[in-house]
Length: 443
Image (cartoon, rainbow, N blue to C red; front, side):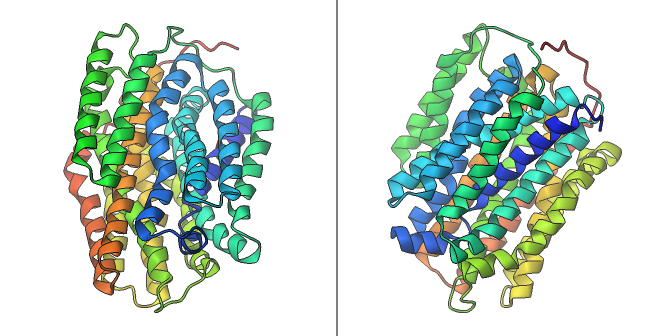
């Protein structure tokens, strides 16, 4: 890595870690948050998915801005939204307030696809490795959020679960303007705000329909979606080029991302709930400790999977990641009576499988499009992952609400394994990495 790009990569890496941490922080402390805020399992499921849902709604807009005008400015705006949301979540005493804080944090979900835009500009010849680092560090951050939130909640208070990452993000936000490049100015056309609003309404009503189980909201989401398609087809400069969505590598990668998100989020939700049952009686600190090996493995898997994509191709890495994710989850379905069994299952599922599959998925979708569509293509994958993650958590929460027994946990893990194996037939649509054409850089 050239010395001139190292500071920028450090900033992007720090943001990937903290975004991952903030997304996963509520999971180990869900039992604690349920007690302090008086939440039932369904409300806990909503709390743990609000950030993901918000990311899905706002991601395409911020990604489009980054594609058109460069990623530097939008990254700075998003970092301060994260700080505000984390502070609000830390001091919330009611469910609506903490949901608002999670909403603001969710605006920062667009940082990952925007970071890919910057990384593709900085590392033209080694984009798969850079994407591998960023997705791997995002996974590391997810594990660190799980690892540190429990001890922070036990030793200090739940407030520090949110405040500590917020301090890191604030520090990065102060340094970022000094080291990030000016960006690539490919298009300067006016942003398609009508398309953005319709897409946001489509995703928001879809998520609410999934949570509430309301057919009326689902029908409304279809109406908004149809309106969005009509607007995008006629817009001179659409928010999302529908031709990009029809690209085989984009839609196949999105299906893979959705299945992966549904599988690992359900597992992530079920494991802390299982460990907090009387059989284990685990505290938030205990839950974090059990998941520590996953963090250690994820640190290595990200960059290694990027090298695997570069040398063996995205298809090989995708198959390996999906199979490992399913294998770890199946192990949990069969054996979850002892702590070491849960540790081993999570290590294989999240430490090895999800990290490998995520890197391959994002690299595949980026390779499918031209550089000016990097952010939108990555955001499409991110939206699919977010929708899948919300479905996974809500399905797991519904299972526990209806019948919180050992058979319920077994069924939840089994369904998570099946879901992640279903899209294996689409792996053949994943393209290999090709060197992108250079674009003009402006200060």
